[in-house]
Image 1 (spheres, rainbow, N blue to C red):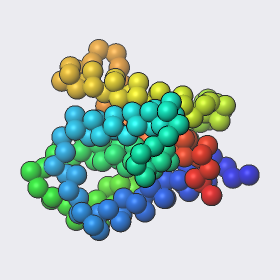
Image 2 (tube, rainbow, N blue to C red):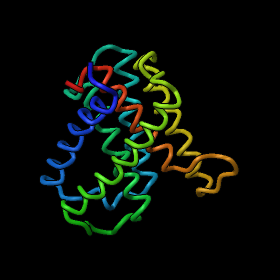
Image 3 (cartoon, rainbow, N blue to C red):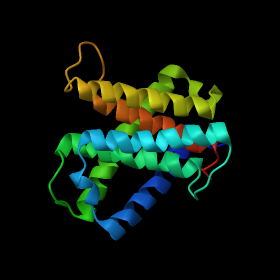
Length: 180
């Protein structure tokens, strides 16, 4: 059996590959997105997963795993945008974008390792639908933080929520067998 580290690396490598291919096709067009727009993209992906889980059928090609991969990649975009700010135009090369992607993914990986140590892999006993619900909850938290202009009294920031969404999506992909 693979370790959590190996499984995480396997699913996130697939996400990076998709991100890299889309950088080739579109460049870093996402640089124009403001944080609320990134959050809305995450909402669209997570809401679709929930609908697929409930309805059990789809009318378009993308499946639950594709949407979890989208959540991972949009969470990375969000983390980059939080650090860099949005831009009026594409202002970074694909190479720079991939370097930032790798930096943010390593942050998520380290957080996953630390939480996994503390929680002793409790995620393995959870239902995939719980990851979906937790991601949606985190999105609602981020929307509230955005509505408050980022001024919170006792809560984690947007970045922490994006990292958690990324990690829940990675767990979903592992549980769906996309680590093979």
